[in-house]
Length: 233
Image 1 (cartoon, rainbow, N blue to C red):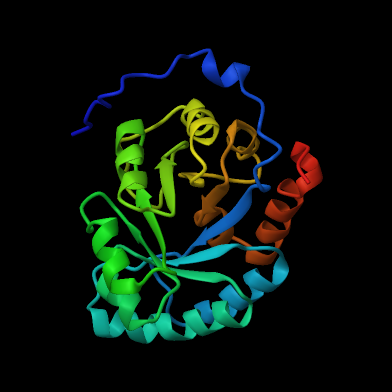
Image 2 (image 1 turned 45 degrees about the horizontal axis):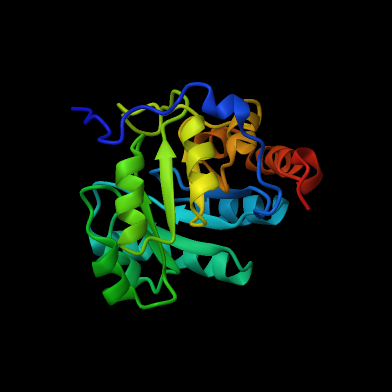
């Protein structure tokens, strides 16, 4: 069931009035794994990270035990570390600790950022899914999250979603708060520009990269996110 945001809807004219704040760093790419990271996937990840700038990689697997998840995640963590790409574990604080990950991304049912901070330490990057809710995002920020994620902005086959925010939520957040925001959900090089222009600090992508040629996809995103494209430096 979709909960109504206690803060109510945003002014529909807000986004049209917003210009990306050039004082914020340029938008960066946040890469999310497919559910199947077995077989040749480590080689695909290495090729993708070598093809262009990627700020972070989220290790996202489902329906396997933690021992198997750790076995699959360890080589991916090493690939990211060799390239200075943040390795973020989805959902599980304990798995993030086990893998010595750079951080954890929490859904609304996956734990509290305060708990994650206690377990993972002050340097951990902690993100929280906030769907289409300004209220949830503010709560996450107050709890110590390092970034908040909004979405799904577009139809996606990666997961079932019931929240579809307007890009104006990115405009509102980036105008009012310094904590970075991540846009997620069905994002491709073609439909990403409105989200970047609205104020996304990161765009999270999965199938747009892993559903085809990962090298070509990363290069396309790199061209799109070049600082000069949106007037940032």
